[in-house]
Amino acid sequence: MPTIYNTFETWLTFACILTGLIWLFDKFFLARRRAEDASRNWAVELARSFFPVLLLVLVLRTFVFEPFRIPSKSMVPTLLVGDFVLVEKFAYGLRLPVTHTEILSTGHPKRGQVIVFRYPPNPSENYIKRVVGLPGDKIVYKNEQLYINGKAVNHHKIRIYTGPDANKMHSMTMFNETMPGSHITHHILHITGRIGPQFSGTVPKGEYFVMGDNRDNSSDSRVWGFVPKHNLVGRAFVIWFSINWRNFHVRWSRIGDWLK
Image 1: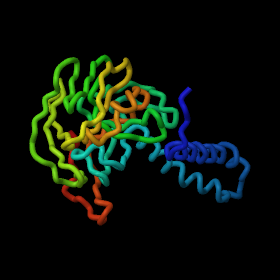
Image 2: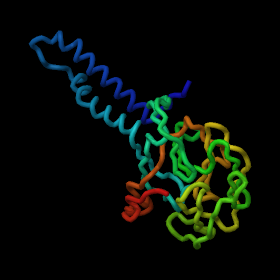
Image 3: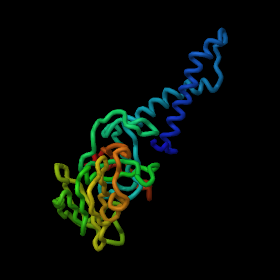
């Protein structure tokens, strides 16, 4: 039985059901008793006003798009702290709100895609990482080199990274990386003198291996394990807003950037 999490989604669903029931009760029962007195009490009027809005928000948030705020540096340089992304909820299946039971399969994550998922050790939290391993893949991460099914993943040094959210204590090098079977190249970072978590294992059926692009500063599948399909929220695909919280400066140049 899926756990019901105490989140905004839960309260939104509850409010939608409550206002909907009040509206239906008024329409089919109370309306018949009012006769000439057409007035309604405040609770009914409130429910009639809010129900359509709540229902629309719930449907859009559950089945179409959901905003997500980047809270940490684990996906630098692709995503910065203060970026806001849109998540395509229908990318990996349509799920009911609250229970997250899949009602229609619409696709599966591909290597290299940036996804949002419910953090397996604490599903009330949402995390964002990049898909590295698919079910059945043999993953090895050793000495800053990623291997998938025995083959080293291509990555090429670009330059020293000094951009936003750079590590002020250690030098960072940016690389291009291309996942097997993908024509999209994305950026990753390595911190000079630091070795990130090592890993060796096979991705179980129905689960995924994810990593942050900031390879030496990311808590991901190397640390806490795989992401079950049930935990998938959707595919992050565009930055719709970005702000530097330290000086409240809007990063206009990042707005509208498509993720890769």
